[in-house]
Image (cartoon, rainbow, N blue to C red):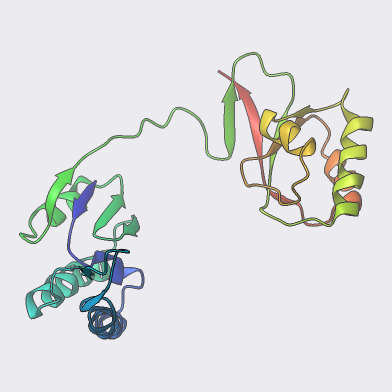
Length: 214
């Protein structure tokens, strides 16, 4: 479920006092921004005056009340959910229709949309057609030194017959860049392989899942 609510990103922490602190900071920052950008400043080479403005919706008592109402509902519920905010939009992930109906009852929420996720595999697994390996490990986002990357590249060259390297990781190994990405992964069969990798590049793996056939 997703919806629109002005300033909802102030609910990254569901605490009433914290919400007020965030709103006060936003009000102050916007006042400074209007003073800095809202006047007239020299513009084009033709010496025109360019009016520089930026507008936000006012943070009113109603804005604050709407945020506290939503926060209170989420704080008090005993239902499992995940809450994610992005500017003025929020996303609630839950398997409970009861919680969704409670959220629908808040008049302040608009542009409500629904999506349904079909869970077709066990947790901690990835499903592939005709898998050739048992495990998949994802990398952390980490900046390596040139020597560390050379060591990693050489290691993969020596082990390429025993594992599958993701296409994005293959491409990265051939670039001059040194930061790994979280979508890089390798597929393999023996768990002892990770021990060898940790000796070459410690702390590189973010998580490991089992590969199952589709």
